[in-house]
Image 1 (cartoon, rainbow, N blue to C red):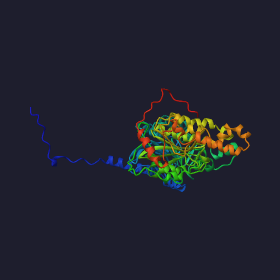
Image 2: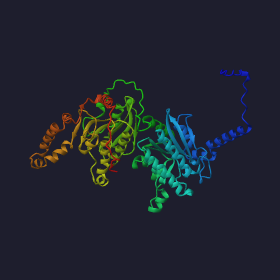
Image 3: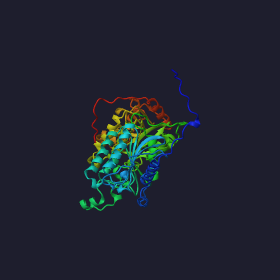
Image 4: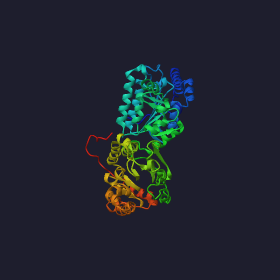
Length: 529
């Protein structure tokens, strides 16, 4: 039998493909017309959005994502209570930021005020499930009037589905919430559950009960901005991690934040190539005064430590006595916690403890090494702090550091007194490498306070208490607070030249790069919330 293949026909013998049937062309035209109508939206509603100083959902996504990268899901979805409008008031899908995959949803205030009903929630649920399954960050652009009242309990059920997914994804993928309009009632819990929350002044508001309800219940008259504006949450409540003047700068910073974060908890943060120059920083000794009571800006120290002086400060306007920031050292991402002597002399209080604890836990969850810059005189004293739970909130920061398994480097610049020294990632709670400047003073309390307590009786009986106090302070300082006291006892690894701080941190992080620490077998610990 002849098994040779049949000869192929000459090219001129191949019949041309038939042109699409008329019905197919008509369907494509109808599809394209419908897509155009959906993506362009109502011109009147778009103009109204612009008059409010806000961009549309699709305009926001265009600012956030790489050009041409957005893949939309459920464009044709309709809800029962949204007038049957396509998309049901939320644009959802996936795209890239600097070439890295993210999942996104943007609530569309031009459709039913961006209100959330069952179909709206189902689209968000789908995006969140895909983000978790693919191990990619999820970004939520919030601009919604709240639950769709006409859908009743189904709207509330939709919110519950979002919250439960956020908790399941917590510590697994980064979650970023951006508030660009109203975010009221139960919807406000979604930004609170996110890892980072951005807000824009003038247009963003977030509260559980609005001004009308507040007035009806308490008689208090308050505006939307006074109750839940960006500055309120950026400086007083601490809900907003970042506050911006406009949407463009806000979404640009979301992109920058994503460039510093890993895609998920199984990956390291993305490194960048860094052409290292001389790591010595001769300006550092001039930035920090030798006198322990003289203030300075810890940001200036941080700028000398990180690459190119660039860092992203978290909660800049809230609890300013502690500094939390993300930056790079030698091209590798680090999280930095530092006392800020410009605010309350850098003491720890309830707000600062909460701020730093949350940041430490985030960094630990996503494999970001921690650098702690210490210059702390103690905890803020007073009845207000004690009644406000200073012990409990301070324990949060203590717990966060003790639990952290990422590389941890401590640098003690000047004073480190009492329990605040322990809490600021001391060797006793698991710091891997502890460095100190020659100006360091590590003690239970300052020399003057210690002498007043320890030698109270001698001072009371002395003929010249002032002269005796000065002599005792000098002796106490020389014996117990000299720069090498802690190093001689193994609690500080090295006393370094301040100008060598960046180089020493780089060496420590390089040494710790392969650190592995297995958590104990347990369901979870009981954080002192």
